[in-house]
Amino acid sequence: MKEQDLVILLKKLTSKGRNLSLRKLAEELGMSASSVSESLERNKKAQLVDRNKKRVNTLALQEFMVHGLAYVFPAETGRVIRGVPTYVSASPIKEQVTNTTDQYVWHYAKGEARGQMIDPLYPSVPEAALRDEELYQLLVIADTLRMGRSREKDIAIAELNRHIQRYVENQ
Image (cartoon, rainbow, N blue to C red):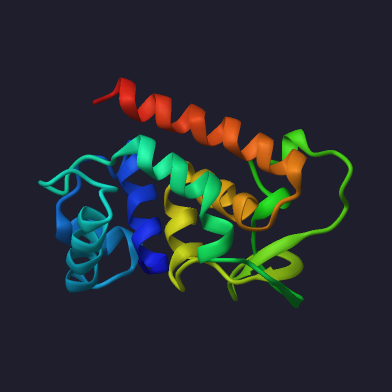
């Protein structure tokens, strides 16, 4: 599994990404169509999408994100830079975590926030997130699961479950 595999799955969970063609999905995420195709094939082998590569296996995705994400794609903080807020600095986590003054961002030259850098799951994540608020929230949840403390992870799990429930209801 590669980092972009998770980004693609999260995009497919969003209302904007649910029924996108392969080409449009690639365009929305700033990836090549061949990368998206290969990623969907890996996700199929991992049983994270159905055999037609259309629907996300939400139970498997939830289990992977909660129990495996921090081990497979750990996040580390870096120097202070300009970028797009993530982790406890962005919705839906920041509203529920009030005891932090630290700022965390994905590097993005056009970003308006300054904070400690967290490498995004894929280089095009900041731009893709700014185009799709729901994807942005899912990526923030993923970063929280990658590096959060216990209470923050509990909040992220509840938010992930809310997004997954909305996806399931709209199938």
